[in-house]
Length: 239
Image 1 (cartoon, one colour):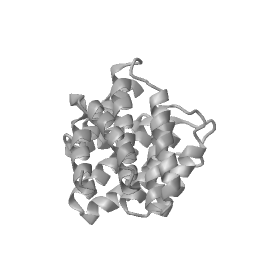
Image 2: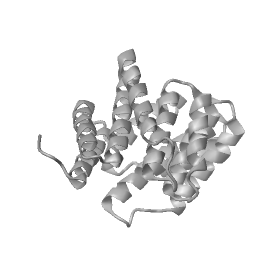
Image 3: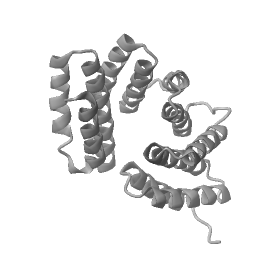
Image 4: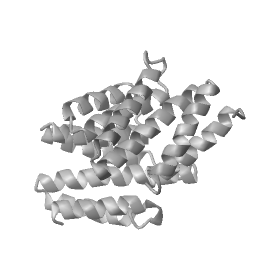
């Protein structure tokens, strides 16, 4: 088999994640990520190994959420734990690979409605990230959801407000087109969580302000998946 450089493997990984993030074709993303996992192992490329396992876990998570097929749930759990095994014991200083593995575990438990365990992993992820950048805000967004689902409603409101403000304070749009897209995805995700919590707490005025800002951000045609999620959220909240 033709050997691949780390750079070539990275390009495949980026392509697979773009497909997965847009949920265009999860089957295609799984095929690419499976190849990346094998190539990374052959090339002794740790980064590619961790990210391909996490990417596969996320693909199967989305398929399980869509179909409720327990086979996909099992594959999600298998790949999430394989990603975690690759970063244990965690190296120092903290690396992107640790963030990816911890986040995948937190998402896995959330998908299984095991909110106390999801909360544990989001807190672990927060603890190893000291830089309050946009990614830190994204962690706070998911932490707020886990807090809410665990019954910590007041704390969840505080956390989601911090999430939105942290992402806004770290505007990454000017760095590159990829950063611009990612920042908008993170901000709109946090705003949707904020809208959910404020509506549930019966704060209509604040919720309306968030809704207006969210709809302005969602005018970006690249955010079609977020637009679908927003329509689902409005139905859920009777807005």
